Image 1 (cartoon, helix red, strand yellow):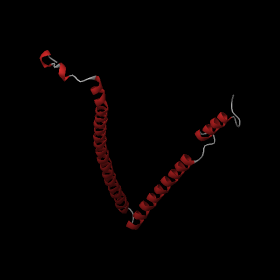
Image 2 (tube, helix red, strand yellow):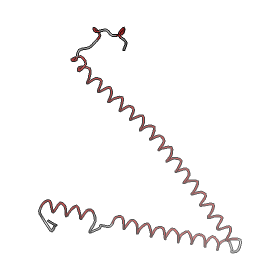
Image 3 (cartoon, rainbow, N blue to C red):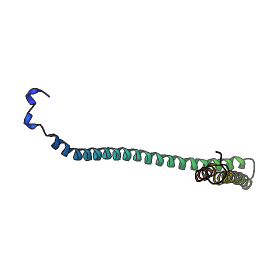
Image 4 (tube, rainbow, N blue to C red):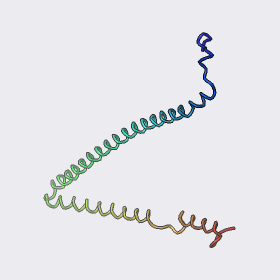
Length: 138
């Protein structure tokens, strides 16, 4: 600030400045919240678009897999009757589905089974130790 712009009468008192402080803090918080909302909205838009594109890619991959299944039937039909080629491909797909289902079931059971020495039991022992109940190390 240059000396020519300085006007001692335009200076505010400390009480006036302290009186303006809550309003300025509220304005700052509102501005920060608006900036955060804009940032989150932009990110949400990009995330939504990305998820939509992945769904589209998965849909086209699904159709490509169907075409490859048809190709397998046609290729086998060159050396076998069409009904037998179709039956072989269908059985192979059913076996693959069964295998994936069994592996998925085993993973679900492993993920949901209780672990006697796991975290829950460890927390229970800690709580018992805090209460002074049960067996615990001193």
